[in-house]
Length: 298
View 1 (cartoon, rainbow, N blue to C red):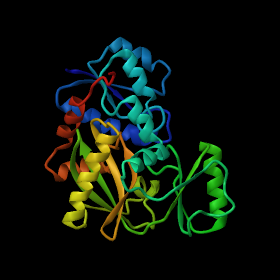
View 2: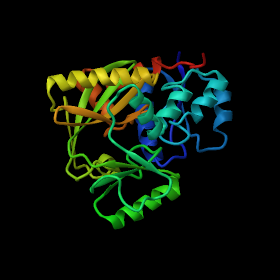
View 3: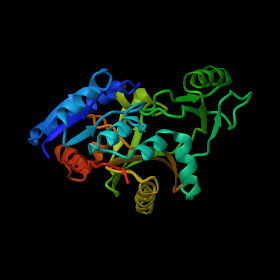
């Protein structure tokens, strides 16, 4: 297996993150001797190019809509080309935060309390401050910390108009911890400490004011619980390859925030940080993900 198509960019609001992720993966795979061609699905002829190249594997470095939500996975299934990441169904379910919470709650996985709305309510379902989220964005795009009713009306309306549905969660002042799972094995958990009040898009990619602590400053018992929960979530959702699972920890308890089936692989991304701390180089990590590629049809 030497001939690789690397999908980068795309049309989602996470395009810039995907381009950075793709460039890092491209350099890593080239250094390992693979023949790699980057293709951007934002270009209309991208499918023609994939067919012409007829790659051994597609390495999916897209994020968000059209790349992480099952759409591109469906195209690759039809072409019978092995690809990295999770299946059509798993990708579609995990991209939708509501579906993810509903499924995992059924299996008694603790999730952050939430309410969903297609029409803005007259009052907030939880005491302020609260968090507003769209149902199907990543990288904290469109996520707001709300402290007053004016902002609730403004940003709640904005999300409903743009995405059709709004998720409201209580703001929990705890430790945000994220666990990296590779091929079903929980590798480790990192803690995020933003200097900003809230770990939003700017804290992730723009401000440079966020500290990352590895391993997370939690008890050994909680580390073990996170590994157990993360592996269980991975199995319940039938994930594949590299997955990052985000939790909020407080008072020796954890609750799920969300599941990311195509986590970022930029310099600022958490999966490579965890892997490096566990002795897995970036090149080795990319190759492990590459070798996990498959066709998911049953």
